[in-house]
Image (cartoon, rainbow, N blue to C red; front, side, top):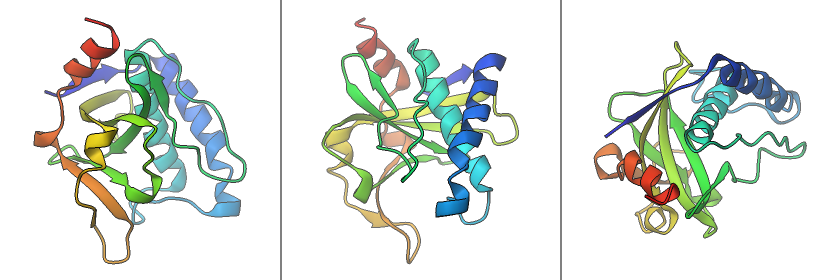
Length: 172
């Protein structure tokens, strides 16, 4: 079911360079560090690499906007026939899942795409699966950590096949 995307060296470099631009806000706002498993720059890099991989699959460019006063506006890509795409990324290859924070979900999100990036080999990205935004929002929210945010969670086995999204977006 997983779909592997191999980033071209130029796209990988562009994504890593852009991660540094987004990470400049760390001094002012702090950084999302995944429970200290990654630096803020690594976290930005992993997320942007996933965005770049999905964008390249559909012949699009990844979002290069930097929001000075906040993280971003939640629009990672706009895909043909499905609209706004929110890309969620993990560095766990065993038992990965899609995790979408309830507070960041909007009805404008057409689809969520779950990706896996190997933090030790950033050029290879796997699309784990995807789901329509309206279906994600029907999930019972849960917390993964005692003081963490509420999340919609979908395990890999319950996600849609990435090839199905390719067919929908490319009109096949």
